[in-house]
Image (cartoon, rainbow, N blue to C red; front, side, top):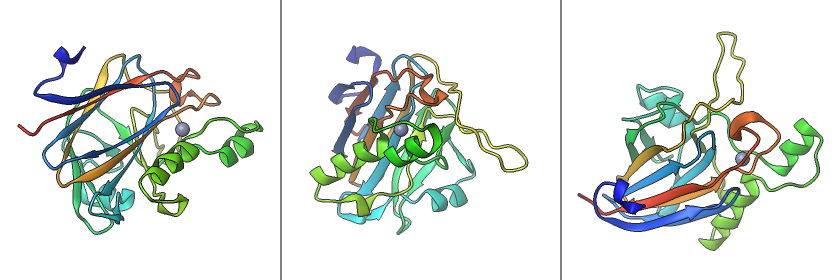
Length: 207
Ligand SMILES: [Zn+2]
């Protein structure tokens, strides 16, 4: 399986449908996230490993990059302190969201009238706790492979997803970072095609 990933792979893991994941990524290493079956939203947070207060800043990332509200190859993920955290160096999907935020039990209840279900906010918090953080350390997140089109009147939609089986995004760490993933468990809207599926994450050594 690892043979399709270029370079020297130091970590290779399948993240189950609906599960969470986190890992320190050292400067120069590249994290690849693979949407194995397609149409799977991957919620993503990133922190400066040396200072967790210096965390991904969605608004500043959108303002600074020419790629605007859609993230793709060339986009640099900036922190609140404008530390370049990670750069998208390759992307077979072409468009990733950073305005839609993550799903939560409260949103599922408000929007869909359902009871407690697995959700990205709970997933994120469970990973943050492992690294000494709390829900106060949550930030607005990236949604890899999630399609959030915005109309001229400002209306935004959630999906349906456009990613294909095997689509991937490569993120090179520009400093030592903590990467946190919620492989979105959402089943009430089309961001996962109503069917959450596994993803693959690999980390490869600096070139
Ligand atoms: Zn979600």
